[in-house]
Length: 103
Image (cartoon, rainbow, N blue to C red; front, side):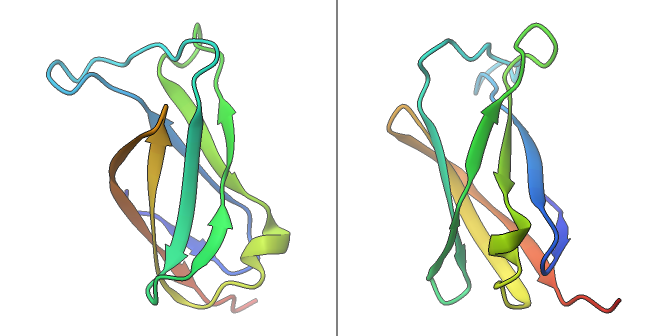
């Protein structure tokens, strides 16, 4: 993920769950438990993402990770890290840059 967010803006990113070997998108079955926590470079939790599973007939394997601007308003500039837990199993880590607002 090569993403930048401005402090105080909403955070939203689309993730596609894929088969490890074929890289084909996997349909997300009902009842799937998905979580994602974001930490700052000091290892402190700065958000638990809201997870919105996409209509699987439109975006197979797709789900959004979202954080409200009321939470991102308190973020500090730097790098943030997270991972995704699906039914108890963790993914690899992702990271993104948090930039100061200028305007």
